[in-house]
Image (cartoon, rainbow, N blue to C red):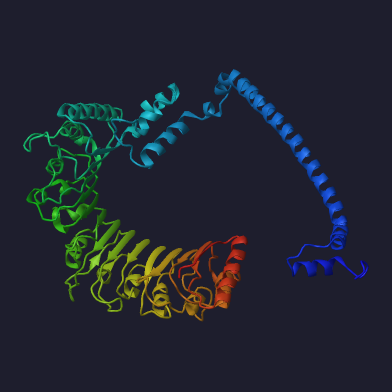
Length: 546
């Protein structure tokens, strides 16, 4: 075969199908076909070499620039350090008026978390007093920032009684100095015990615990206590701690300023020393919070209180027990009650009239299914000026009567129930809340089937007799529920048109859950629509529970 009749492609094809070496003619043909590619390869390799050389040159320049920048930073630091004193003198901090600095200190020490008395660290009031001479003057001449103290009685990791006594003696001196700086103002004291606070192998059971040194000092200021919070959740052994016994033994003459008492107690059985205590009957008392596992632990003068908080974890917080309490609290302004398991009697001789109640939190634990219609303590309550109402409950309840008796509610958080598959009951309940401005709805049972929310959402923007909750502007609707894209658009835009004519307030903040929309495409379109409305100025957060 002549050379002309051979092509590089055919030669390659033939050789690749065999293991024989190429002939001289085939080798020449292949080499000749590679010539153009070899020439191009040399050009590319030359460009690679040039580029590498350029990069190396740039790296050298960058290295030099980094060295130069480091020197400049060093020069800058030296210059700044040379007139650091000048900048301190010209600091804007020096121009803050003294009364503003005082208010900053007050907000930090009084309005936030209560500063903690500590052996190893400095509490916030002491930190403020160590910033500079001016701040020290302000801290030491602002008594109110020294009126609150959190005391923790917890195990100390020391091996001897002497070391423990030394620590508690130091803490006692600090506590005394702290309260003396408060002048004659009323004090807020939060004492917190640990279940292991009093376990020390080197102390005999009948010997006083070293923490008594500190507690004696705290108790010596009881005549100035205005608010007392005592966390004594260490009663699993059936015993009440010694500090708790001493506190409940206080009388009116010992706490003439006391207005608020909070007790956290894990005691499982009643104790006569608590029941016989008169501390919660002192005439100055206005606010009581009881977080106990055994409801009627204390004897309380409920009639004088304006604020009560009763934890729901006590089985003794039955309907009957709470009805008896609320019938005595005629002056109640704030209530936060947990209703334990138990059934409400069918008939009571008197209802509960709370003419001054403005804020009410209720958490009910119920027997039976969520659709059983179990009665509620709310069926008995009349609160004509109630403004803030939060309720947690699983079993269905008709809120209509309670809302009719409380027409001024403006902030509401409530559940919707299993049986309310179209949310028509919820819609009817809200029809009795014309003053509502903030609303939070959530499922009474998070495992319930998704209700159809179309008619419900439309009721806020359209209706033959007017919309529900015309003043509502902040609406949080949690859970899994279904609705159409058309309904969502109408719900979002309906309050932006013709508002003045219908006396309906526009939306300001919405939390809408789109996870229950069954159609996937509609759910995506809903998400886009909510983003658009957010951009238009309405604050909208789209949840996506599934």
